[in-house]
Length: 125
Image (cartoon, rainbow, N blue to C red):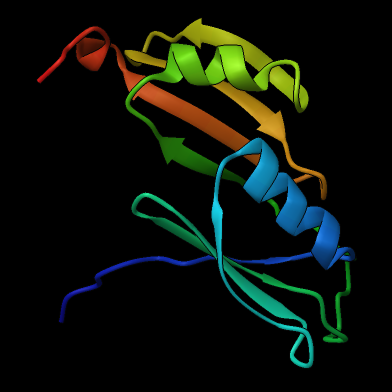
């Protein structure tokens, strides 16, 4: 058995606002939306996420006890683009585990981390 992808479904209280954040701030493309189901699908490059605004029981409200980590190919340029467009959790830094990364929050409060291995910075291959 092979796992081929992971597509998280993010719960939101505001579908329009969340679609706007991911499309206008992060550059995702809206692939599909069904207002009857209160569902949407977004994609950027090889990353896909789904959104759901529904009436399922949410014992702790909207939330997630982790973060979403995006591997990117130019973390410094992305930082320059996003640092003034979103609420910053931590600024760009090179960590001892040889990743250069930063983190922001989306409009729902989900933690989004973006990183690039140090040995890939500056490579044009």
